[in-house]
Length: 72
Image (cartoon, rainbow, N blue to C red; front, side, top):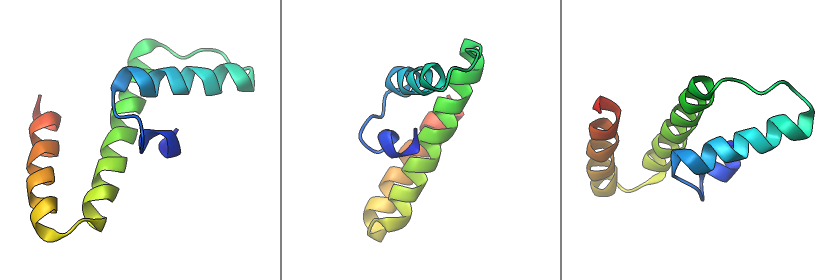
């Protein structure tokens, strides 16, 4: 899911990817809140990894955006 999160940023897309992987593995489907929390965590991890590779000016601007989203 982390590799797909680089190109897909919307939580709904990440949840769909997680559901596909769970179904492919033949596992019991988790609850929506579990999937939603997982999508938020993966999205944050990918954004922070992106920030660590970015030039300083872009990191500061993007970090402010991430923190604004997390506070919501």
